[in-house]
Length: 462
Image (cartoon, rainbow, N blue to C red):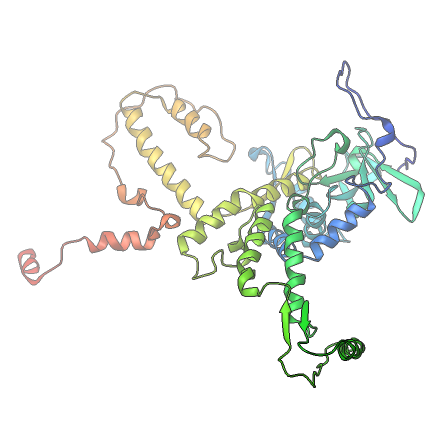
């Protein structure tokens, strides 16, 4: 049975550390306080996201993109795949279904808290015999709103429920796994993160106020303004206002007021501006763009057109998607990869399989261009094969583990018969995202440049 620690652990200090730590009295941040992580704050951010459709869509879209990717468990050293075959099989099956949670449920649970609340998402890990050197036996997903950092490396995270204020447990380092966004640099909030809703809170407020305003325009209630009763006498006007006030009560507050016994027409002076003057749609899309940017996304990723008039071009859509791959999605992919890798033995790692078609084509072209260039420089005795091999690996064109040198690679080989350049395989300089035609159109254009097979040419060929 694992031991349960309920006394507060002291913060760690490195040997010879000079920097000042915050006093212990401020470490336990369970008591509600303005701008400090607390129960109200976790609940507040969750309600803020749930009450704003754009934020919810951004979060769910990022999670959906992660779930759409395939994944695998592989050894850190590619040559030891057969040696760790059983461990790879065990953790692959375990992450697919732990017995309590499926892989998709783990992603949705943990990423939801990581993108909503300051502490982020977390899970308790259970090992066989409570020994981290054994296989992982179970995972228990936790409520990130009930957790807080302790600054102690042996027991880094504590948990307390508001229903049990006098009972707090602390997790040892091997029994807790955490993922959170944007670590705070403020000394008073060390160990906490800044989720996307906190970054774009003012945009969320503006969107919510805009939604309330537009919803009020659609409700069957009188608009805000002054009704000019014209030449109606004071006593009659007061009686009419009193009766109209009674008409506004009940289940359906919308009633039709009736004016009579006056010569001039009654006019209504509106206090607010018309929706046309406010340009509600453009304003909403502006704040929606800010909201999406806080998650590292664009409106195109959510299915909304970034422009109010006309649609979006293919080149623009591809560029927006590429930008998202390098911002919001890339960050979440890295955090998810680290989250699952920490649950595997040190000789294994978790990898997401993201096959980017355009990136694969560009990488293939780069490899082909390098191969052509290296062949010329090796034949001219400018570089040896091992030097070319080292530079290719340094350029990032080889993503697997390979040997640094090969036998005989430090010597110049015999000059080959010559290098035949293949410009057609290298492709056009204009990519599809920049307005080009892509692979199929490029090849079609090359075929169209062939001389027409007229009747005279066919006869000459015979």
